[in-house]
Structure formats: structure tokens, C-alpha cells
Image (tube, rainbow, N blue to C red):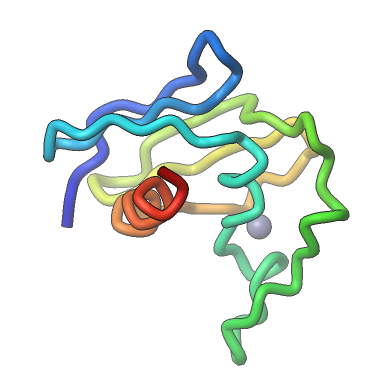
Amino acid sequence: MPNLTKIAPSATGQIMMQFDTGEQFEIAPLDLRFACPCASCVDEITGKRTLKRENLKADVKPTKIEPVGRYGIHIDWSDGHRTGMYHFDSLYSLAKAKT
Ligand SMILES: [Zn+2]
């Protein structure tokens, strides 16, 4: 599993992520917000996403990003959502899928 070495908003309004594989990606804040894996965005039993993309604000962005142990990050969003914890491996797959 690749480790995230850096995550920060970029000058273009995207979110820049760097991994210890040497790869660097930029993804849209909305894509990251939509990928939130928490129990209010994904049904814990079926694994189905209950969050609807059209219910998100197009200009949603992180207000705070902090590390969780050595395997993930926690993001506070401008829409008030703050229960999402993202594992490095899911960030990596998301970044790969979006580029
Ligand atoms: Zn969520």
C-alpha cells in the first residue's frame, strides 16, 4: 500500500496528493468529498453509497486536513461534514481512477 506523503490544496483549486511511490496527483475537491467513506455517506451494511452527488455543493472544499495514525487522513469540509476518514489506499485508488 502506498503511503501518502503530502496532501494540500493546489493553486488551481484542486487537491494535490503525493505518495511515496513518487507519484503526484491532483483531484477535484468535489470528487474527494463524494468519495467520503463514512457511515452517513455509505450504507455500512450494503456498502452502497447513500450520498448523492447532486446534493453536494460544487464548490465544496476542505477546511482542515489532519493525519490519522500512519494510514489515513481526516478532513473537515466547508459544508460542515467532518466524519470522513480516508485511508491512504483508497486515496491512492481514487487518484489513479481520476487521472
Ligand atoms: Zn461522509
